[in-house]
Image 1: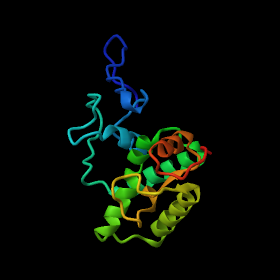
Image 2: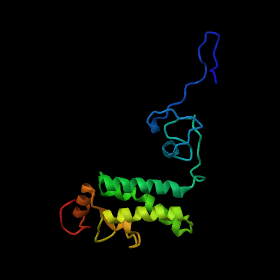
Image 3: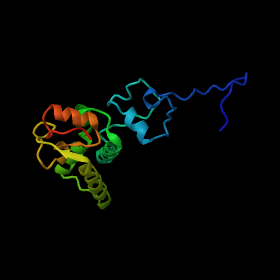
Image 4: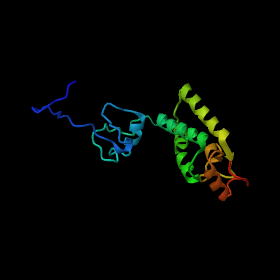
Length: 173
């Protein structure tokens, strides 16, 4: 569609807004990438950067489980590649697995495909965890295995856990 022009031939359409939270890439109303939605739905009031040319998605209407599963997949990938944060960062990043469990405990029924994906991610993470003497997050039940181990691939997390006597003696992986 040709642009609207003035008599001088200048295009009068506004330039696409740039969204700082999405790395400065143009975000138009018709683009609904997961990355844009994740970074733009910072609060119920809309994006935190002040951009107004974006569809406001109500987080309450978005399906939560797929977002949590995506975040969990990213976390497991990070752990496999060598998690770079410390113990408190790791515990914070585990919110996605805890949120999934809360949804399951509340009666969420998963399709066979989602069950298989969750089972696969859990097994991948379990293989990478060093058992902890106690929960790394409060008094989490033993069934929440993700809080009862630290990733062997995360030197800083292991060092922090050793300092808190959460692991048996030894050196980080």
